[in-house]
Length: 369
Image (cartoon, helix red, strand yellow):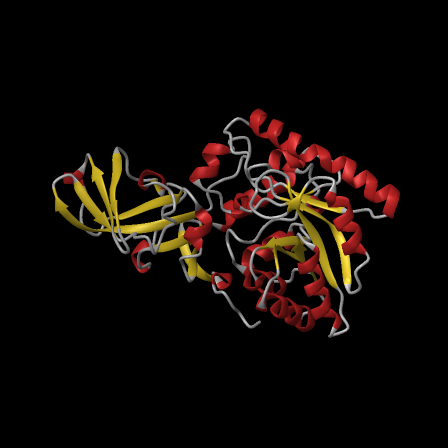
């Protein structure tokens, strides 16, 4: 029997998300091995899976810090037992109040957020000051991706100096996401990442020598994980590695992770010769990629996706006569993160058997705060 097959699959309605804890465990061990066996160097992102149980598996492996993208993900991680969580996002509008409420509700956990300008930092400080609290912040630095962050130039030091002397703010360090390096060649990815990171060394030395600030550095999502892992005193924050997907398996072959999340779908129609339709629409699998890069079937060969709508995926197949309405197909997403976020729960598979469900709790925009 193949690793992904489920003996009691007829009890699982489709489409559905399946998660394989033994393979998640392998991926946790792979992350730790990549940072020299020291789990305390990891600051993994929770956005890929959004499940408390996977946070708990990492805590049991000695991982202490977690990164997230939403208030909901932060609360999920905290309620799973995490004591140190960074939301890798700058708080604006109502998010400032929600972060403050999290800090008040869960005082035993250290929480932090990003800032990339002084006005936003001061707005955060003002809100926390009203409650007699201090907000922990990391400076989000743009070292080439041009998505968020302050420029990495002569102004960066002065911005940190201003943040560090702002009341009710505790400056913790720097956050850099260099996801722009996406070559399938590790050599090329590392070369680009190293070049973009190089100015950070001078900035860290200046902070240490002139301000006596020993800043932490959080760096290295999944694309640049291999490069970041080779840097001393850097916290690495891969995320997709926990579940893995086709896209990163193709792009980052040196990270020996295993696919740990699978989508199941059933053939619901054979509308015309050579075409099957399955119940895996836009609402069940991440669909931001081109049509031929949304799902890789594990038990179907010589096929081509030819149409996709909200609840249907049409596929050209060569063995049309051999396939039946009701047949179950298993597939791995090209991009697992948005695919997981489309499902309320994951069916947990142990030893080829569905044994329980895990709630994808942080797919919600709000849990309690």
